[in-house]
Image (cartoon, rainbow, N blue to C red; front, side, top):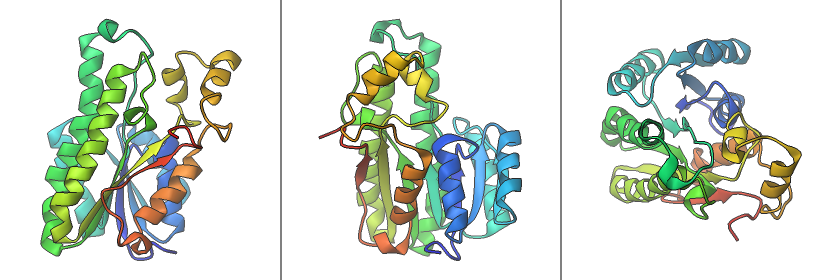
Length: 248
């Protein structure tokens, strides 16, 4: 119950890493807004998790949608203690010059612009209260890029740099900002990153992970629960690899 009495927003909470984090936060005593563009899936998970979970639809790339999410979350839960920027998308591996412009724009909007928009909507209240925690879900792709994922890699490198800059700027206000860098994980995005989900592509990806397995949402949830708890009160500006040794 390390998050007892805390309130949190988790974006992209209907599946994958976001769902894992939402489940753990509820188990740790938090009240959680499950924010996702798939409102039906978020509602189904909220029904499973019980009264501590509230589902809200959001397009994290749209300012009005993010502002509406923030207003609804505050109306439902009061002050927001924790923001987890988890929503993200990838693109199929391909030569950097071949990615269509509309896909490039969508990757940047969801992975980059969303962090800016949620900060605009929620940071002022955190600064006024002089407390709060922001956790950005980045990627090992931002540290040790794989070829043919250049624009996804770049978006996650941006998240890491933004995390560190936010941490420095917000530290005087008592707001901590950290990131998690997951390795390839058993989530719906895995097949996208690999290009195809076959034994051969899985073997190729696993060969780069010293611990010899993909990450799971539970791995990320454990790390998130710690970083967002008071136990990590002296940790800010960290982009923590949760990667089975891939970035060594």
